[in-house]
Length: 377
Ligand SMILES: [Zn+2]
Ligand SMILES: [Zn+2]
Image 1 (cartoon, rainbow, N blue to C red):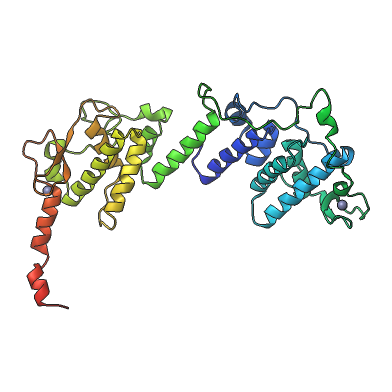
Image 2: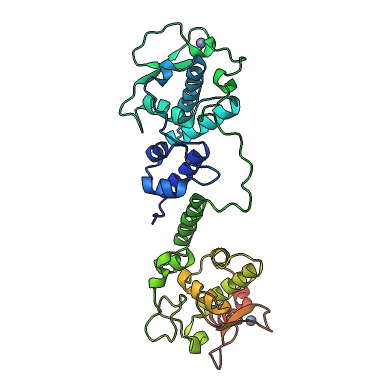
């Protein structure tokens, strides 16, 4: 299972970019540190299949290839260097520079793996143990081009010696090499099966959101659809085994009496938002997260905020979700204040509207407006 740290989300998103740019398995492994098994299983898809063969890591690529490719690699590396100089991380700088290169040189033959290997050798990272390349400034065109360390400045700048107008030699050959960049890909057709990597990225994002909202690990597992959800059982004494009762269940037969008024206010606000969002066709998981955010905004500063897991239980009992067989709560409108609050169906004599009770309590606890007006501070 993937962990949900920021690092893992970053690795997945980086792997996604690399796969779309045609990176080899090994290249993605170097850049992201994802395991080979995971890359093989999830990173490629029908639309972005794994490239065949070995990645083009060639130590003398820069010195044996065409002048045009040397020039392109130098331009890309210079762009990469500007980005890392601006604080970009190497992976982001490489991906951005490569994308830029493909836009500015649409007929380029420079593959992503070659670009990767070039900047590896420039910075001594990833596939290279140490830095063996550096920039030399051309005295003629003032571009920076790549050369082996310690090479004297000579007049062999590939940038100004390339005929940029001429069509690429290899491009015009009958059999275009497989390193040729793929043409822009149209949006994925709907019948395509989902990309495992996209599912994993969405999953990691969801788990992080749940954790940030304070979901306990069991509720988190249920909402994120973890396969080990089935390990959870209801607490002892519950007649049914449901996902919704992962902790000590709420006393539904005395719910309003045993629940604090300020908690009932929060549950009521949560439940009203939750029901509205579910009716808007949000998934129950999205609806829970958004309803909790809305409720916390409305109840900002409450000294005793209700927990995420209790809200999950309220949602399950209100709409009979996550294994709850029937609805256990009604959302009832108060005739006095017009707001909605929760009433447990199992309770014979529920207490009144918590909003009205709050107002009443404030009337008792706080000085009356007259008294406050008589003693201005
Ligand atoms: Zn030059
Ligand atoms: Zn009321």
